[in-house]
Length: 385
Image (cartoon, rainbow, N blue to C red; front, top):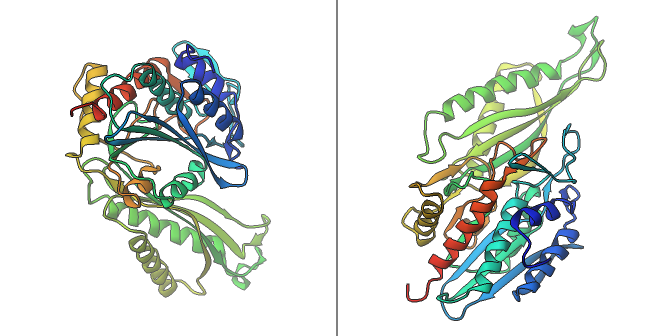
């Protein structure tokens, strides 16, 4: 990549390199990122996580001092089944926006971080310590790449995770608890329903109970994230219009706030199922398969990375910023809960566009993100600080 290329040109080029999960192949993006990083003399290490699927560790070394990590992902959501007005892998500038798959989640953050590092490499005066960008694979599959990264022992004094936050500094995020449940009944001709046992009715009863759980969870409000929540997001059942269904299936999506655990969500689910077994004749459920499980996390507002990020965003945007929450799960959970690294989430674009058709990012936010990431690094790695 040409060192003079703008962040807009960089994002257009990056989006055009497909990396959807599934299947999770990020080789085209990784090769492109590596070539760019080497053009400004960063040290690049490729970390094989799965066959043909690497993490990249891109480091600028300014000598003895603190360690700062930028973290974001190279894979994107798979658009299969969606209807796009703009081609997902052929990015387009329309007005003040860039449309394309990954524009905000999270190739916008990736190229903004790289542009900021390029600036730092060009003007290293007054910097000390190290800055490493960890561009990971498999975030859309539950954070495979970052889990591998932290299990390899990465350490740092602070980290910034690039996700679409509208350039807000998020210090907490929800965890995910997703399960598939299969309800069993007995198939019969719908003209003689008494000979069967309707599995869809069992699933429907469960849905009502799970909605009631979400109402109970709403009673406690986290200061940055609001309440935890629980929802049934997929329901399937039945084989023919004239047959009492013998099977039905649901997927639940329980979002955890800091302080909650998967064990707590397990107990909630088990209590619901036990109540339904008491109330309903021949109620059976099995195959409680784990779909996704991530841990909620938060960083104390007094940590240096939080105060630095808030100062940097306030400076660039010319308005006072306060710490916010991030309602989705992300790789902050691995950095905080496993590696013990104080972390914030910060990036261009809105979570409303992530995983949605016609994903886009505002060009002004993309450009501001470069300035903010540069300012965070210069303040965190400031010589004599």
